[in-house]
Length: 112
Image (cartoon, rainbow, N blue to C red; front, side):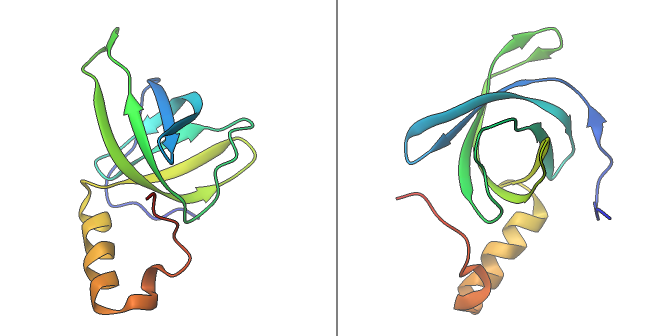
């Protein structure tokens, strides 16, 4: 069962995923909320705990400006991945906790 602070809004956005300054895949969002997004992930190779950069591509329908941010992969299934965006309260709390307790993020891979 998923636990969310904010409701999901179904929206299909074009998204690039970047790991170690290389584009590792292009995909689409299934939905987005104030603290994260769910992506289609067929054969991209994401794994839980991975930190990636995402680029949301500019779009005309719906009108969306380009946007880039870091995101933490919080789950991966055969079809979808859940990402926590770095501007979310949950992400900020997690980063603060990691500064206080070094093993909190021991399984998370940060890009160089």
